Image 1 (cartoon, one colour):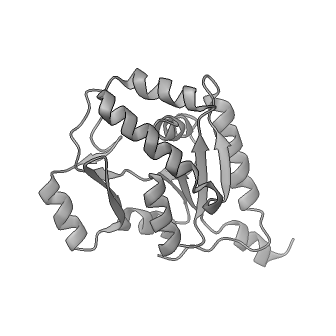
Image 2 (tube, one colour):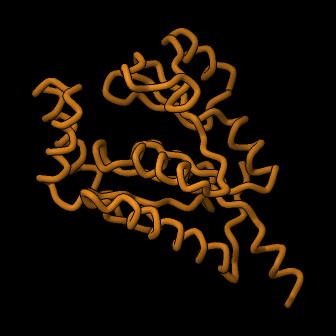
Length: 205
């Protein structure tokens, strides 16, 4: 087999899992980790308070608003955004180091963040997650029991606007209730196919 093609197959991917709040981005990434997939999973920094079931350094890097501002000022964020009154951002060094090691990098961001990453790294692989229906999305958000009715309405309204941006993504995957493994199987198949492109995605940050 052509050695140049084998080398291109080994080119690491920057895999962006995105979609509206409530579609299951965290659950999908967690199941990918549980299945031992050989990716570097980026840990996002956030200024929001830690929820009772969350673990520092695993779910997020929890920092104060002042610490977050300092990280942005030092140019340490690949992208960052104000999301529902709290800041979230992707540490640049973490992504660059993982790509340099030859590993695929998987991260989850909101739709706004995905657009920023696309502008900075046009060869990133953008995957948009969808719920099976509007009703399913609302049910998931209510099940969290972390939102007031006002915030819930805001998230649903935002989700409808974000779905309009679907065509700016490379793939769309429906994450239905009780079908998490099927969702992960589809994402893994997409990644496998991308590694067999005749023109590989060569990400530069």
